[in-house]
Length: 114
Length: 115
Image 1 (cartoon, one colour):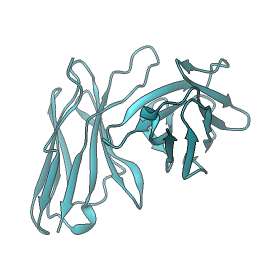
Image 2 (cartoon, chains in turn purple, orange; image 1 turned 90 degrees about the vertical axis):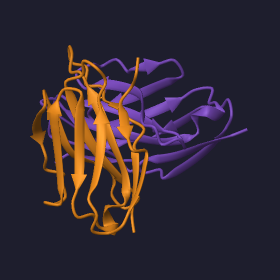
Image 3 (cartoon, one colour; image 1 turned 60 degrees about the vertical axis):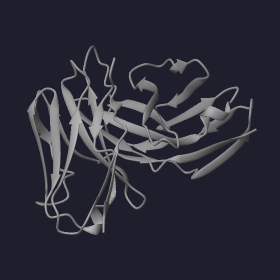
């Protein structure tokens, strides 16, 4: 069974700074998908970014980028120029193709300080 | 374009009562998921459907839980009888698997409180 670990329960950073959230996972699969979801206080789950394991290039979405290290089974999220609206819980998730089940980590609560 | 719609947004019920949660997926999506979020267990998949057929129900806690998808635009999650430990936020999500994209879009959730 796949497991996803987020070792940082809480983080805080000053507005406009850069912050990196960590995620590691355990799988014997060679092909899979990794995701970061954001859950603001409204509790809506919002997809932030997606990475396919077969792609060597790290995914980027505006201020959000990932550092995908397949050999190390690491998938960190970098938020540049952080904004107050980035305050939320961030969940890392794993999916194996052929079964669309998302396995989530325990989340990191990120607070952006004005 | 409407996202995933869930109703009710909040539900408070007494132990032993039947609870029905409802979900309307995004039009055109062919997979639907029910997740539960609690402080103790985090986010966990209960069941998912593809083309209205249940594919993986290994996360359904016990026989008190049942889910149906009678058509492509509607699904229900029923708990009968409900227990206090069922208190949680229940999310419905939908996706369209296309060209290797597996993005799931979540509804706003239903906060269930069983007293």
